Image (cartoon, rainbow, N blue to C red; front, side):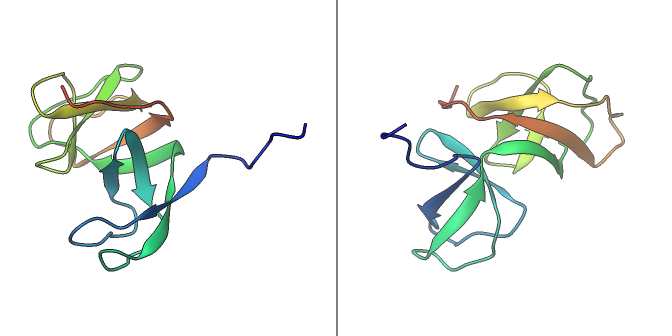
Length: 115
């Protein structure tokens, strides 16, 4: 196929203000990425768009396997419901208790918009 460019499981982007921390979620335009590297702001780096990642779960919120996962960018945590300022980023892989500190999230690789 002549027009194929590359796989898009990872993408290059410019690190935002504050830089990136490896393993942290970043909203870059309409993309959700998990930073592969820790770099300073303005540096070109790589982010993963797909796969399953262990992310910080919001304190006191249980999640159910198979439900939508929302990213609270202000708190940098996975949330279990839609609300203002959150992004739908994927699907919870397995249930986690409210006392747990992480959730495993399968990124959907779709464009996101803030709610």
